[in-house]
Length: 264
Image (cartoon, rainbow, N blue to C red; front, top):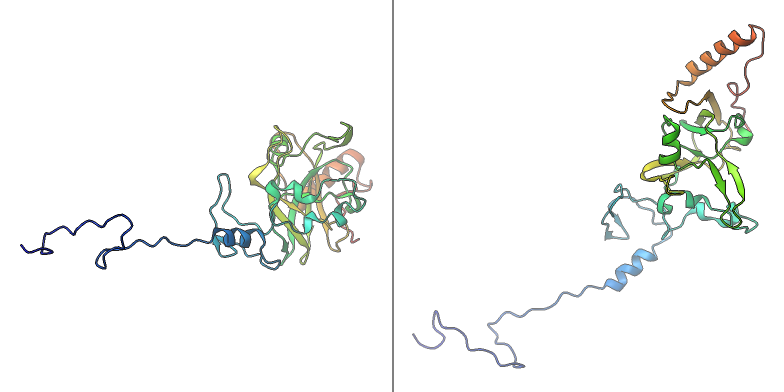
């Protein structure tokens, strides 16, 4: 065959020499990593889109993640990191955002009234002292309260090791929150090696529940340490009234707590 014919190898190109026109050339793809990182860190203030992408960048769920893209997190702080509101005297008090795993939470305005649950001290029987952390489903045991919901028996100030509060499991509250209330759901932050929380454990923070008109405590039931079963509000109220009548007689006043729900 003549030179350059079929089956003939092309002559090797010398180092540094220009490639032949009939040889393919490789052009590396340009990737502006810096711009992508800047877009992710400095997102627009009004960009709270949820889903598999944020700022147009594909999201890769991390190990232990439930795959949900929360509106706020430690890189994108939201209203629950407002120190002027939650620590006005700048005393270094913990902010509500810190109660969520990785600072992750959403902001929702209820489109209809919704029922939430809380395990608390017996003295928490009226709206003026009602706590602000709830669950969407009633907890079934104290073990679930301490481990999944990460509620400690005692709260110690890390600065001076002083006791700042206790959280005994005495009653289970069923609370109805009206339409239009802002609520903040998200995963539970761990508090210690025993109070684990985690991405799969959910809780709801309702900052203005004490002052929101229409909030109602439907029932207050004694909490059983193991195997608690939350009764529907009507059944709980009837059971409490029957128990009260059997102990104190038909003419005795009804127990406080089961008739709560006054607007404030």
